[in-house]
Image (cartoon, helix red, strand yellow):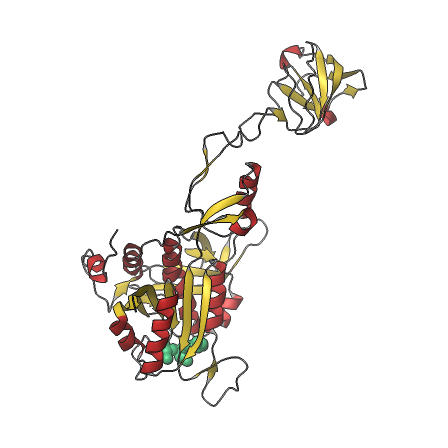
Length: 427
Ligand code: AMP
Ligand code: MG
């Protein structure tokens, strides 16, 4: 597959204006421009956590391998139950989990069975031991209506069938998937190789932690949020530090990044400030476009592909403001990186009631930081974390979700439902 140019993908949009680009158009262009990296490696099962499965896994066996009991109790044939009266069954023996026997109970008999024990021939139901009216070593008595045919019997292959697809490629492997693969006896998994992502911060005003904070300077926080976000995506990261606003330094850094990584992320320098040489150099090194996206925070974004000495890399020139860099990462770079890894992971938007009015101008997408809560018996409610400036990183740490106010949306009234993106999930 030949890699498309930005012109190829933007020409499909009916009204493409890089200076007023809606979020969804930017997302669409990015999606069409990105091609998967497609390089596979085999890793041990535990090392596959959070990695992208590179091939469908076909179940080699039935799981469970045989019909078995879901409870500690007594297995029997439901045809032996006396309708409307007590049933007494003789105990023919005991079956333990993992210790199959050749016990074949006769009609009118039952078998004491432990959870996971293989169902003896002729038995189709299990009465849990706590539901038996009377039991001793020789017999049990079951009251009418306590149990019906098929209760507490697990079927061979009810979890996974031999020859069936257990997991599909493109999946980011979660704890349950590791367990599922283990249940199939699979020790090694084909996964996409880790994506290599290089990143650096630009700005003469930036200082690294450990350095003195000179007058007019700020510590570089973007490299740390980017480190965290990329690590969560299981990328191999190359932290290139701070690059000053000097054309030669920027060019050298972009070239090194491009020669060593699949994707390059920078922060700062993509708006129109006087010292922002980043744009010129990026444009010189490849097929790069500079957008003003209809969103808040995070309007400026550079996107494309840069090349140096025969290597190329996808480029995201993220804005400099600390909240803007995170929002742009989550809503643009994250999808692109996952796509390069062969995975698709749409962000799940939920709905919650806004506790207070929110001012919102139609014509742009806003990502407001907020706290989702729920009083007992109530429904999910959301309130903003206070000042929403794109430099106020505290708004991200205090928040547990973002309220997503879409392009066409206007002011939100107290009690209105809004879309939210929670930060934490179970897995
Ligand atoms: P810029 O996009 O380069 O004009 O930067 C916008 C704002 O973000 C400026 O106030 C910068 O000081 C700030 N900024 C840029 N990069 C960083 C960074 N790595 N860490 C913290 N603040 C930054
Ligand atoms: Mg700057």
